[in-house]
Image (cartoon, rainbow, N blue to C red; front, side, top):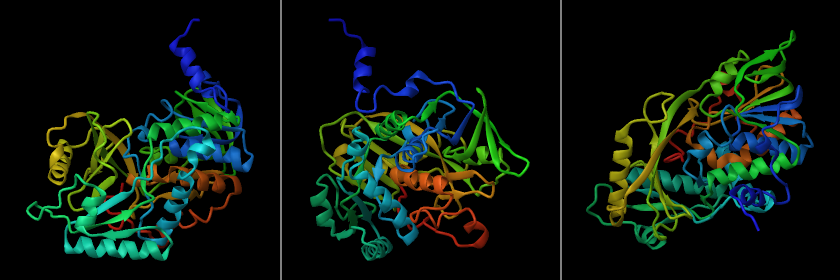
Length: 416
């Protein structure tokens, strides 16, 4: 019997949804009910829920490169909902609820693992703010608990709780439902499921303009493969949302920053959870493949660069080696950078715009990946019904005009 890599790939994607139509790179139709600009996790999730829950299947997802080739393939893999403000708690916990059985719903293993997210405290201020988080989360029904330094070490044995390091561990906040998921698996799971419901996924198709009618409403998207008529358009283009929105005459309060991370050589299981620290600005987890995923926050300057400053990675590795001295001899295999859109209040915009038929999903900063299923679910509701889902009702564009800000900047800890 003759076997080929292509036949094996076809078998791997052959599940209930059949061979994905996006691999045939379909030509765009003359028009769609909805066009989603951006083929990352959020855009594909939006298309899937439009088809699966709202019966809108004449949908196209347009991607300038290849699906999952942007920020969806360059992120922390961390999943959690232990944010401070009620608006954020509602949105991120909505996502976390969907994460629980997403693999079963999509019939695709997204590798969600609820191994726990431990956020360390190193100063008296850290302890106070961490406990404030815990109380706020518990009032909202979100799991979070305080651990002593010894309990932190028991939960994560390689953690150094010695008193003689620069920032001794004074305790930590643990969300047991938090954990990790595989970013590219989430993209492909939603892509296959959406394609199986009739959604067109069109790669290598750059948006060059958004056409509006005489009344001001959206009527078409101009692309490198011709004009595509659309009754509604959703912009989900992480890192470039403001550029695309400007094509329709909409200004967004966004800044773009580089965000970096590193991956080590594969090891046998050693880090059993996600460990994060705001004070030393570092996080670490271990993937199912065995590599350590290590990173920090965004660079402190605006840029569209995907390289960022080398000093960020150096400081991050120094911090990780202090917390986990047993890892000092581990080799780093590769690093990468992405571009994140950030609003002035460090919370997303997930809403209608002033242009009829135009909707925007942007401004997540470093919080985008963990929100993927909840974001797509709520955004699909907003587009389909022209009104927000309860989970995203507060995340309007008008809040910047009215001063009703949702300031998660300091509240989100490391913010990943």
